[in-house]
Length: 439
Image (cartoon, rainbow, N blue to C red; front, side, top):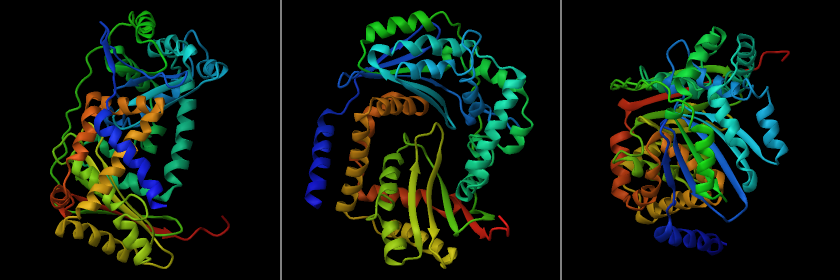
């Protein structure tokens, strides 16, 4: 069984080592709109995506959640097209559409048969400049978002811990704010602030269009020029200048909420992927936490049986330095203090002794295989291009795998010793409370 699993991965990696590259064509319109087109003719489908360089990172204190709320409002209609018209048109054409908001960006996508991919172009151009943001509509959708926050964060203990850990990890950088916004800010939201947010950030010079699939780049580019070329550029986007102060010691937060089991999350401040430590941190995250053979799962779940889950993750694809996360859910009847001790012991082990070459190579193979295999999807090809473009530049895609391949065991130990230290650590503990009687 092991041989059957390994051979396909090795084949993928051998192919990737010599052939991985995305033949992207880049265009720039006079109004500042960047367009990336990648032809992929394996299937008669295509995706059209519009990415805006705005997320919770660009919001101000007291006005959090604007970017995510604006994402919701983009489906509520323009002067020409009424509410739900956009999605209904795409669905009638046999396609699908959706959107997403992050700390660094907001994106909108449509996935259609390639002979119908022209349909969303005019619709996206329309809502880039003609969105209707009436007071009543904004406040109504604000209520939808507050309910979303209640379900996904307030009533989800582990998500709530993550939010509290991020708020404690960053003191003055806007990464401390939740993408969905603080509940108090949402309740006090001024619709005029959302309109100003839209006018400031939804402009061609702050956007990138990505088209991937069975398209003719010259034909699709002409249609993009026709629909988007006349939209005037917006004012220059003010740079976000906040820089996080140096942390001088461990921070701890405790959350008491109704929950079944104790939970721990640890966040270490680390550089992003373009830093010299980035690739090795990525491999380190995989060594600690990729499958049941990973160090954390094997030690805490399988050997010691003190946790139901244990994981780690390098969050490096951000504009600014972000975090390396580690966490675990305690098993029934086990103390979270013992789980924390074992979690930190595994991190210390990798600082003291570098992993052997086989373990490092296996981790690099897994990172590479995952990265390459997701390119089979035109949607994921576009998402990869977009997430890199919004953070470190899309051309970094072509150097990513080469950087992963060069990581050594000594590199892994070096970045662990340098970055996973108490002075840069914030720990969050979930203390379960029993459910109230009658609920």
